[in-house]
Length: 171
Image (cartoon, rainbow, N blue to C red):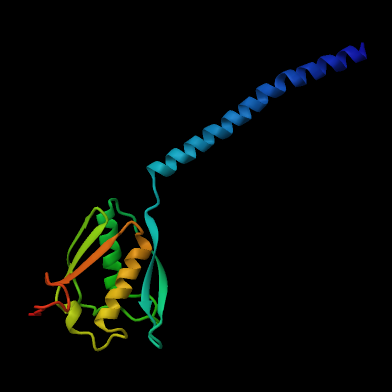
């Protein structure tokens, strides 16, 4: 009699265990799907980018990590990065690449190529900066290529003219 009760209880436990296991697996799966959907619907508002700036004491280029607002579209992401670079570094141990009054006139991204046009103030007031204009443009390009590996070409102009190519006239 006792042995028949033990075998019946084993059958009940074994009979209900797969059912419980299926409930646990389905609950875990449901929570995973819910968390994945909520993450896709509510993407993070900020994305991490690294910008390169020269040091104040020495001109060695150093990276600065920032959280920038997440925007949609490659062109808008590149524009946000350019705006952040123009703002300059957060740390006082780093120097800006361009004068504070520098402005982006236009930016166009097409098929891996970025065309950037700055106003003339980016070129004129460079005596307080650590790097000369040509080296600053190289570091600027490195920053963009670091954050956007899909960029194949970066064409930079100042007032619609390619810097240092004849005839280059700043008004």
